[in-house]
Image 1 (cartoon, rainbow over the protein chains, first blue to last red):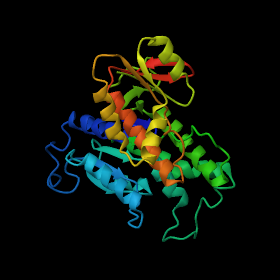
Image 2 (cartoon, chains in turn red, blue; image 1 turned 90 degrees about the vertical axis):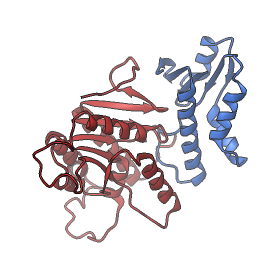
Image 3 (cartoon, chains in turn blue, green; image 1 turned 60 degrees about the vertical axis):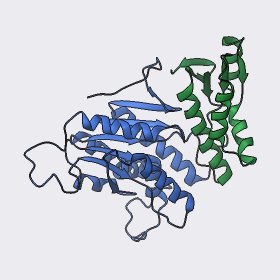
Image 4 (cartoon, each protein chain N blue to C red; image 1 turned 45 degrees about the vertical axis):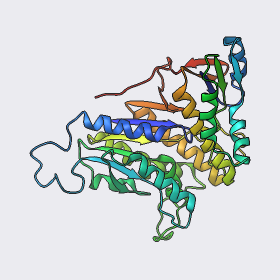
Length: 222
Length: 111
């Protein structure tokens, strides 16, 4: 299952996505299933995961505050946190069919994938042409983000992916990197939206199901 | 209280005036949030105070603009403003008897 939750900044999308993930997961009895010896009591026993994508830049007070806010908000909801600021393909090593993963969020993930200059350097980057070649850029998006999310979804994991509405701007005279970032995030969201069981936009804390046309509040249950 | 939200110039003011001619209308609330911040006030507390003050039965319509659907602003004050404005919107929407979202002049009742 794949649900894409989107919304503007401070729209209440995170709180909604968290509660949705908890609701979907608790409806299944996952984590209580017999026949999985060694599972309970160990990491991942509950099968409810929070894939966190923000780098812990402790020198940045605002980032620290944001991370703290999100931690407080989800405290007590039963999530186990997986720090995955890049390379979400690795999630499949930890997460099993029947589990629920809240991926928060796609905009951070893409920023990290595109702009993080890390330990591995630039050696043998198969996507080094991505800024100059649209086809390579799209392959990069599929390989690093779209593909891994769809793989989880198809493997029987419940995925709640949080997106972001970033493209309604007054000034679109972006440099090429920012333009690529915006186009990239929109590509990811439209591709995941097409594959999703449901796309929900949160407006001022109110969930609106995309495509319903009636503005009805959507409550997704399994 | 009736809360109307939408992007800039999506028709909030016109809709409020046409649908609620007898109501007290507070418009462009996102700019009030900005002013409050420049004065060092807490916008969420100010929003609470506003609703308490108006709790006398007269119909109140508040409309605001969604300013959080762009890229993260580079300027810290702009970032804080859109964050505060979004949280105040969530608060008003939660308190409102009715929430309407404007897109291209069309109002959709969300609540």
